[in-house]
Image (cartoon, rainbow, N blue to C red; front, side, top):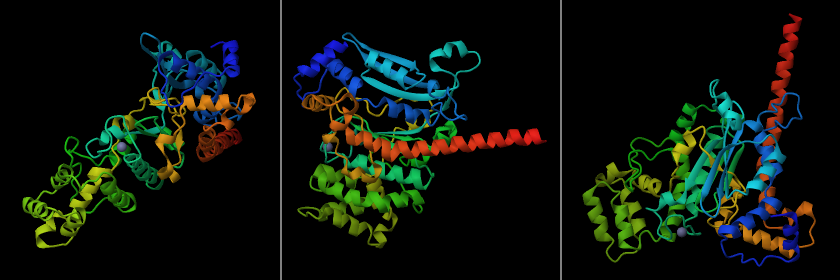
Length: 436
Ligand SMILES: [Zn+2]
């Protein structure tokens, strides 16, 4: 859109229907305005430069330029996928995004050399050397345990599955692995993404990433059946904590929101998880015309009677099968897997991929996430606001603020400290070698 056309839009606002999801050329028009006025280029640059902003003598000024970005561009005829885009600084990134107006921006790894010039270095090696540790969780992977929605759809009844995933994974990343710079992002429709950005996480090898993915991956051998786990001895401390602190209570709520024991077809699925025919038939009989089925089940399996002694772990297995996070582990294992950038617009819903505060994740409501149409409407309603504070006057402000205060500022502080320490060590080593 030309400058003139854009200004005309301000004077004569587009008719915006904020409930309608824009498609085709309307989506492109909306994206142009979004990338022109809302996308937080400077914050994104600060994040992905990790302190290498050219200001400190110890910083690596080539760092940001070696990061792969990838754009999905929709024309009238087809979808074009541009990989290995790279930018030297924030303004180069801004110019390119505004010009190409991608429907999706993905972030890849940091490579040994500038990805755009990779062909020139094919001989000497073009390899990923740094990458955030990432997690991708899609609610569509839970279709066998949710009854309100399926596929890409989600509602406030099933969204708690994502809240559970955030709580369980976030706690383990902090307490078990000692990471502290963790960004959670709403994917715009069906799930959440997690970016672990500590320098130690970014430098993990493929093998170390696999080991971490395996740590979280408790569904072994049960991918295609509802029973996802079989526990024998005592639970691993991580799983025991997840169970006690999160899963147990959340499953109780899940029982009521999904009416798990009110419909025969639903409670039969749960009975199938009990590997003892006689217990199953006793329960099925008791449940005829009875409404406290879940209470019965717990009471019976936990009674310690001779009959149920082999079934002590069964309640935990049921709870884990229904609520434990289901990860796309290939995304976590890979070094050069692409993951959608925060603050993108989801083309299917028009919603912005905003950060989620893990400390308040139960307050996050995917149905109230601002859409690109809503932001433009808010902009039009404030036609007199100055160019510097478009975002401040709209419902995107809280998300940008959250990104800065909870994630970016503490991260940059750590990065600067690390740069300073590495630089001082290097200076000291030089001095020592001269003294010698
Ligand atoms: Zn739902």
